[in-house]
Length: 116
Length: 111
Image (cartoon, each protein chain N blue to C red):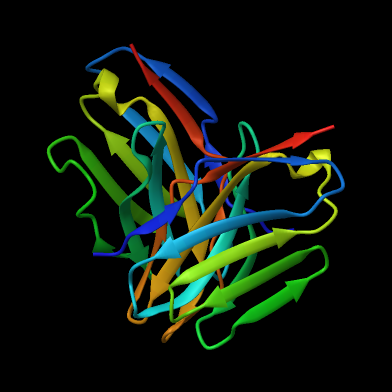
């Protein structure tokens, strides 16, 4: 089965450090999402891309978060500087969207980030 | 804006049917989804239904959609211990492919 691969699976870092999370979407998928999951807020959309172009990053704190797709096989989410409130599980998802039709999105296993 | 609501907890005896409910507010919703999340794992797409359908069945899973009431349900027949997980309802709207998730329903199976 095709899968979305996220690295690292777990990350513990000190406050103020830079964190980079990576995602390899499924080959052929044209849309990539970054979600964050916390107990308090549930699943929040941070940003998403279509054909590598950013479509919406309104869910991201702009001063410290950045999301990019350097190529079709890699999406990155960076936090600089990290803060304890960034502790969460970060999910990448990819899917194929054609016109008004989306076939459902496949999620990666997530990166569990702990900022101390 | 879109809003998707679910009850937080459901307990069911092994072998019984589970029914997980969801309500949504966006009348332009085109697709509605059910995802399953097991502990420490990502979200697994279980099934989805297009808004012009009112029912979809896939093995032990039955999805019912009442578009008038904006109500979606997931029925799991013959619930097993492996069905223990959090189930998320989600929707996308025409021209807006972002998934909006509900809070998730934690399904607990009683032996």
